[in-house]
Image (cartoon, rainbow, N blue to C red; front, side):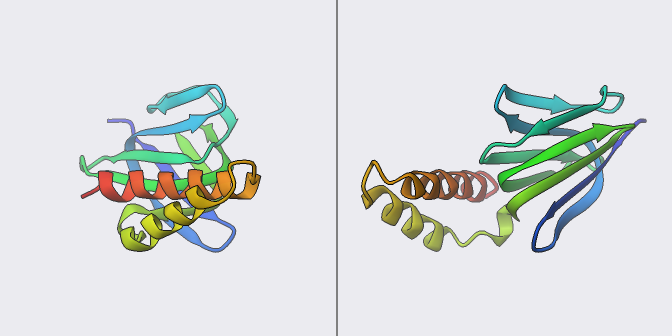
Length: 129
């Protein structure tokens, strides 16, 4: 059975590495699903959950905030500005960050970006439990 070799890294650290059946990421053009044998791709990543199904059938969820990913010869490299696995996310802190960002001025671009990051983190953290 063919498999993908997947690596998620950020500027701070290596996040996850392993073999997978599939990877789903969100790009400016929409969601893209990657299976073994996929043609080469280089794409930007949006602030969104990244979903991986491992070869053992377990699900790996990561909150990815910006960056890009590449696919070539069944190797998927995710290079994120920041990223964290679902089990690393403190839901209470993420909810507090979302509340702070939402209470900021609607015209404050950093607040809008912070709210989007917090929403992504919560979607990943809650979706994995």
